[in-house]
Length: 196
Image 1 (cartoon, rainbow, N blue to C red):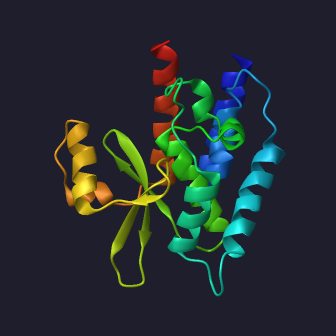
Image 2: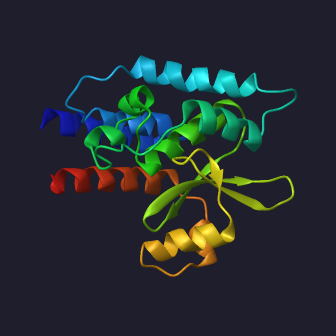
């Protein structure tokens, strides 16, 4: 019970701050992990991946740099042995194992992007969480952070939504708020424990 109270207090404080950050929110949730987590490791890893993105090519980093580095080198994937394992919801463990739920993979991408001034945001599709980025052309790029940074076509996005038993509406592509991402991460974690 003390862990739950500590996580709730820390999460509430972060969400109430002027600019809540997803790395801090994910680490607040990681307090619930049964294993002690090294928060400094998580920050070092996010910073390290940002340095790799910044070192990629000339000029300012863009979505292509992020996709190449995070999609090919960091290569977060679903856990083949236990997709729904609680550790796939805890940021330090995700950065160590490279196994994540889609929302945690997206949080990693968003936070690395933030460190590189590449504006990424979460998109909470039914049944799957992805990353969005407004291209200079004004078009929306939708990227699956869990599957190698695959850029999803409108047909692929529609297929994901249909697979979840829903009908696609353009509003589904709106940026998810920090608060809604925190709620979804918690719901995923609660669901994981309920199903065990």
